[in-house]
Image (tube, rainbow, N blue to C red; front, side, top):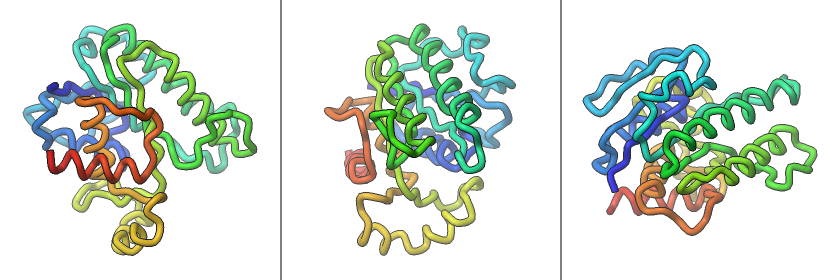
Length: 224
């Protein structure tokens, strides 16, 4: 199945890397990037819409119809944030976008970038983990074709891209050692994007995708 994907968060490190993989993958025939500012990329497959309030996807209903995958890579750090503020950005925004896309494209596969340590019970002490857990749980209740929650830990950025964090670039230089010592806690941005594409095209038996699965699925897609 050819993928027509909508990407949110393409001006961040993760979204930029996922966009890079989507544009170069033969199974992806079209990409729509929705964001508050330009992503700085041009490509024949790519259409971009600047939307000041990304949560108001209903304003571009005509343009967002006809896509069969969403790679949702928007996110913020919870450091220094109150729970209500973090929930508004992490939960409310994500669910607002997802509900609209589900109505427009019920056969869509929704890939959500969550995080390692997310709390599916929504009862733990960690504020961010509870909010992410509720976000995952409520996404799973929407009638999409499928919802996959990706839980990466450390992500090695894709070489040459602009938006990688400085610390990620530094640690990326020793990624082979990190992967050898901590394979359940690290993955590459190339594998993350590739895994999203593979699951959107072929499906998968699990809905929670950790670092090991991201690495394995990314490698499988690279050789398929």
